[in-house]
Image (cartoon, rainbow, N blue to C red; front, side):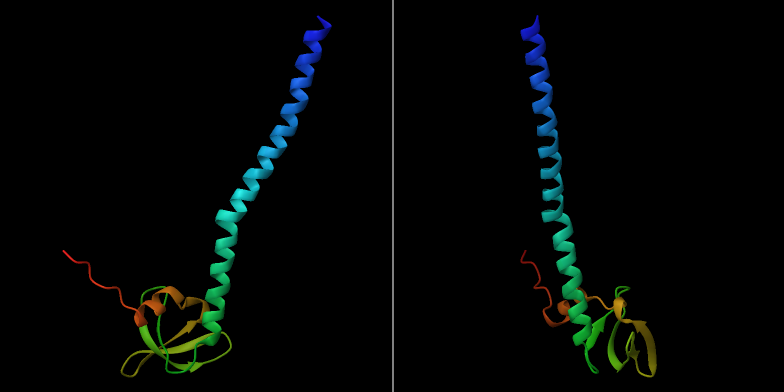
Length: 110
């Protein structure tokens, strides 16, 4: 009877350690596959927005295409048509969509 109780208690102590190892591994996987790539993407977007200058063609996150006319600390003045200008926040410029202006997608072959 004492031997069975000892085996059962020994099993519960090991499972506690396994639970901790499992929890830590889930956190590591979550960090590697979700948090780290998002932080990297935010960093490249920020660098892209800081390098934009007057005359650059841009696309906003709302899909508006235009050319930068004026650059200030937090905003851009974007000309979207002749004599039509819109002031947008720096964070409203989409790096991914703007880069696609320079490298248009090739049409699929049928």
